[in-house]
Figure 1: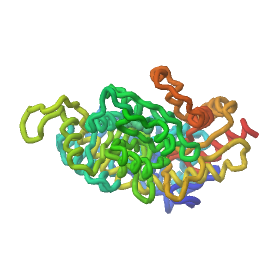
Figure 2: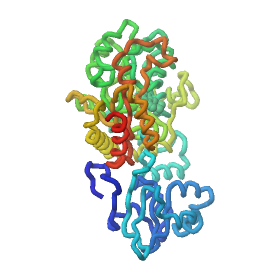
Figure 3: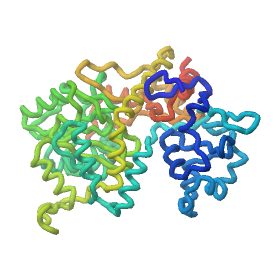
Figure 4: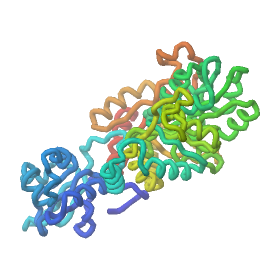
Length: 483
Ligand SMILES: Cc1ncc(COP(=O)(O)O)c(C=O)c1O
């Protein structure tokens, strides 16, 4: 298969893969279901064609296998047994028009190649990219019986992720929201304290402040970075300000160096919300390394996922100790059932950490793929009037692509989104500004940049299924409305 961008399959219409390259998409009945599962995961299609010798006999998919597992399909793992007992309805249906993966068969019924056609595929905005490696790790964790928060993968993942970001300590937790809450409680944030948050973010950022009984102070975002900047922070700072909570939105680093320097001078804490920015850098240093605590989410749509999950990073050993105690019911590690504080159960499981461990091995290729997808969108849509791509950032900032973003005229957005839905493409509007949401009315402030982004932004599908053909379909939706 030709690759026009590293990590992104080229596909102008139907992508033909010759028999010599088709190993990723084809299993033999002499192989096992486990081989089929791993190939279906690794090829990103969730399906493989099945041959007996050279003759095409059907197809197998992860959905079929999942349905058959409870009927004992794995007890006899031969693929021939599976095809005979669980997949027979598919036998006569092997060239289903609607399938993305289709066989090319010669007159003798021999498979001579495969084609990949995404012209009618439903493409979700994001989708976890799981390889055979995640599958093996999660099986390992499951079979070991360490399925709760004790077990080797938790510490392994903490250590690998903190070292990826370049922090001294990693404390893995159940999700990104509790990572933020845990960080704020650990730093002593509570009633009477003000915490500065940006107007444009996912609501978990402000919720974490409210959980502590502190007062959120909403500031506008900078139109170039889409994140809070030093100017906004300075203007909002009062003697009651105890913490600043910058969000690196959509993979774009906030002006974190200057914000942290300012906060240090004033004795204010900084908690970074890095949920959407794994691997982004400011002045060449990864985000999550700057603040007193850096918080990450590993929800299923994030760059690295554990299903649900999160992590607090810090380089302060006392903060790390306190994060660990509060994560685990406030119990002193060296004394059974001795609760030194009112803590939480914010632990992650070994099963989740096992997935994270394997995901992290592949983060560079996931980031390269997302960046390549964003470039494909930009190339395909630059000529469409009204479509704007994210502003280029200063040389100090190295953004990553979490979800590809565009802005369109506000009055055209709803039609674009509904046409996308008709075209079986999932696109989403940007977050609503916090100031416009009912629960935060009391804290609302005038944030014109955030309001404009919230009214004009669209996230585009950014996941493994996005190739040139899908980008072409997306561009067509925008063209139909805007040209
Ligand atoms: C900016 C931001 N902060 C916090 C979170 C919360 O993370 P989680 O869903 O893992 O609780 C998310 C996303 O989900 C997010 O996008």
